[in-house]
Length: 241
Image (cartoon, rainbow, N blue to C red; front, side, top):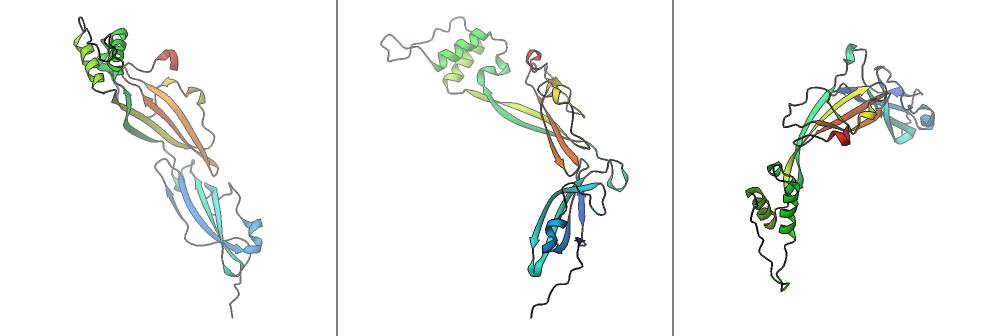
């Protein structure tokens, strides 16, 4: 004989709620409930509903599992931030630095910045598409009279198959939580000064606002904005001002 489960009705919180706060002040946690299967549709927590004990956390996602004897286990995933301080603490901006490299054409290396554009183009063109002798079969010898040592070097390297080099790429990201959607969308794609304390820069480099990401979590917003550091000489103001 199967024992019939007796349920008090309504949505009953289960013990064991745990929450964690990340470095930007975002609190997340999961709360389990149980209810009768035939009452699930009316009792399922709604998006944005406040946690029964932590009033600064609201429902972000919900799931349920139908058990035997018409019992349902509901799991609510909550998120929030305590902007008023107190036990939840006040959110603080989180900053991160990412350094990587990207592949760039060898002729754009700053080593050749003293060469004229014409000399750089000529060296690369002759190295990649060398002229042929009159017979059309053998490669003609290039007259390098008057060439600078750097132009000869560039020509020789491209002839060897060196077509690119690795350029450092640096990005600086601010992550924060807010009670409303972020502003400053008109600054995206423009040269600017990043928030926080980014690393010192030199050689005429500057920062470009690369974009923003904002996701609603419960009743608050989790936001990120990223700046990218230019190469030597900086992002051109005529394109990014």
